[in-house]
Amino acid sequence: MRLAIILTWLVFGISPVFAESLGPDSGSLVIVGGGRMDPAIVKEFIHRAGGVDAPFVIIPTANLGEDWGDKYVAASFLARAGAKDVKVLHTRDRAVADTEEFVAPLQRAKGVWIGGGRQWRLADVYLNTRTQCELNQCLARGGVIGGSSAGATILGSYLVRGAPEGNEVMMAKGHEEGWGFLKAAAIDQHVIARKRENHLAEVIDAHPDLLGIGIDEATAIVVTANRFRVIGASRVVIHDKNYRPVEGPRYYLLSSGEEFDLCKRCKVAVEEK
Image (cartoon, rainbow, N blue to C red):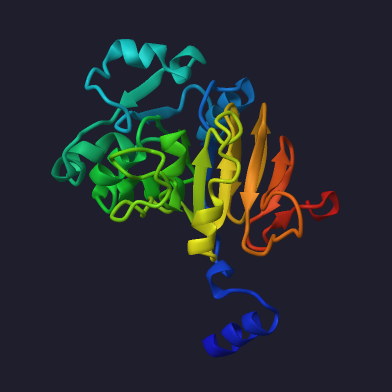
């Protein structure tokens, strides 16, 4: 039976990697391209967690610094939006990240926010630890995981700009694995604001099975199962091996309000909703 299914995929030109959900089967992702937090994004993230009374966790580890106390929480977009139950989870030690005591706040969280900075720090500390497992459990019980800038890129399966020596390196040996909450995807950020629209092209050339998703500042994709919707102030850049125009850029743009099918790799027409 399994062989028959695979043969069917091949006959119709469907890659087996896309036969399962590429986003979370339960719960959702709110992936932000950096910059200011557009009010629509704040509202969406808090709503998907269950409202301002839900338990939230912020993971600031991508950034430098160790002072993540009450002042940091009070200044967060969550607290300013009215969230009352906000905890900070942070360590630089993988051994600590792999302990039951450390992950306790995640076991009750309905919304987890991953802050910006450098994505390699998040990979080095949390990849394949108990922390990552508990993040998966947050999604499994219907929660939401969001992140901005570095906190966006880490949510994909392929980690771009992961070189500790500088974020201009798109493919850094030893730092190419993300947390994989969005499978078969490489996520870039600040793409239009920093003129990075075509930077994902080299990644897709090297790894053609990946979908390249470049998200601009103050913009997000909201991912559930095999679809995402664009919200916020700007646009999203899509790099796909199957999109090869004769002239012009090797990417195309999605605007706020548009939806995208991750399996078919195309915009969702109105009648398909």
